[in-house]
Length: 72
Image (cartoon, rainbow, N blue to C red; front, side):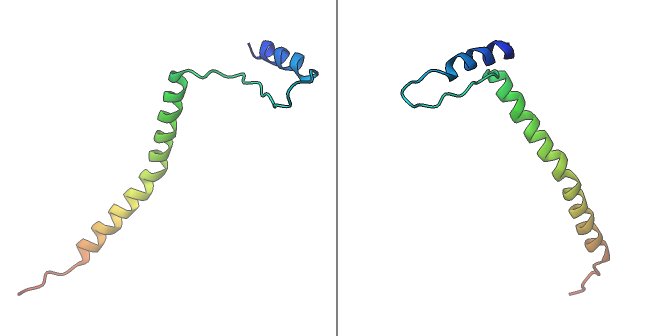
């Protein structure tokens, strides 16, 4: 599939036309690929942010454990 796309692109390179640049698009534009890409991006974001959130929660819990009760 990729080879056929590149051959089609190569045939059009030597032609003189209206001056508009054409780009070979050799990948699939299906909605399933877009959905999968978004899912992977969001999962990676949460995987990177989870340790930071856990560290912050541990820090908050240690601050609360060290606080003294104030009598009124």
